[in-house]
Length: 337
Ligand code: ATP
Image (cartoon, rainbow, N blue to C red):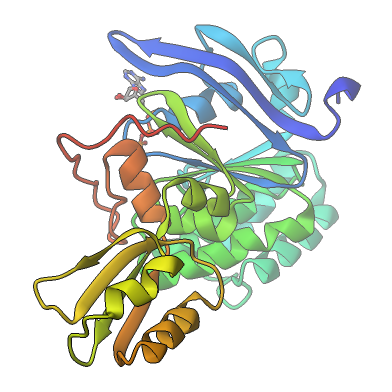
């Protein structure tokens, strides 16, 4: 490992790649500190897979530079390959072999030796919740089980860096949750992970940091919290038991900007800073003015709001279908630090 890069396991600097007339990547920078999970989040065609293909030495960048474990991916692809695991396509699995046999073959082909392979396979089958099904042919596994076996296979040789390309696309909610649990457990192994996903909840649940890509460029980055905070303020919606003339004045000092009244004069809404205790402060202020609150809701921006604001695209539903693009959406929001 290159000493200069100790602490940073994946580094991409100005990566560009064009396929014919499509600029798949247009100068992408990011880095992943050792032992952390980076979520590379973006809609279909954003360039996520292209970035992974370059970092895993399957494609060459037109320009820019990338290192994995401190090793240049263009200059030393074979050395890079010795440090990485790649999962997501289930390409390594033989459906006619059992889960355990699939892992043992990989171990033995990698020169781990029989005994070490058996130990590692048993450990991974346990860790990925596959011990019960270990000796059944993998053809009969559910989608979630196959994904977990695929990730386990990529970890047989204990690579320090793991690439997971859309590991839960197309899985049902249970399969997705169990795959998330397995990925979360990778922290124990100290593996550095680059995870690509179209699902905000997935990035939110698993990633230490998130890089949002769209049209081949990084459009935002930060923790899930930072991205949410940058997408705008929270909102309060409240309903009084009956209209009250002093209600607007009572809550104005506690909110940002004007208080809006709805068609139903009992409804009030405003932008707020979502601090703890805000809802009770609002209720108290209204109470003192003699207005009774029927319902109050403080809505923080979700990552879905962030994604929509940044890319003009809703994240796909959990059925794995493609997300519709929304015409005329705001592409100008810039939250990049
Ligand atoms: P998805 O979620 O659909 O996999 P992605 O973010 O991984 O999307 P990429 O697969 O990297 O996106 O594709 C980025 C762009 O480059 C797309 O417009 C795609 O059609 C194009 N592209 C990718 N690979 C090739 C290729 N081998 N030949 C031609 N065009 C390609």
